[in-house]
Length: 277
Image (cartoon, rainbow, N blue to C red; front, side):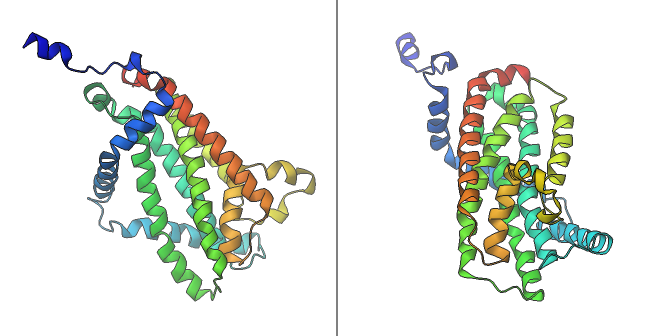
């Protein structure tokens, strides 16, 4: 009996040679658990809601109506397909803001699980992002309805939103991992992040056209990664236009670098979460 126990492999985080790649390996081995967590959490989120999943489609639609009423009358922006302009921008930014905000609380909310069960800790973050990814897909339903009403002529360029969403997802995962790493060490970071998100929203052309930005500031303004992803999403979807190469390169650079840095930072500090959360 003693001999069998001595031969049993023991998990020891200190013996991990490379946490960056070990996390990827662990995530691959637990892919079923990740899918199950997304499914379970999605059901739980809407379990006690009268509208259920419909709310994930209705919410961006109501926001669009409010923005159209306020800004079309107050500022009178001359933007083609203005309701869809707002809705498409909100679709992208809501996915970003909700995913990152939820990621901050995943480690804290699952502190007990972290101490009892070994799972790759990225599972908790990716599960939250996965739920918001489903919500993003569902918002295409009201978008199509509004597009029909607004007589938007869709082009073959609409298929370009697939690589755009992939690049956006890289960026969102990277930022989510960064904020999720900071939160256990700085409990007040959730309040700070809400202010950052609000500021970021106003610095992104969600409800106003880019041409209102002063010419001497436009270069700095266009460095905003969410400006890049929103424009990459809108151009082929609303205007049957292939986005400029500089936008693609910007989206690729931001996505890859932020993802790699976020993954490295998260996995480097993940063994401390159980003691900090």
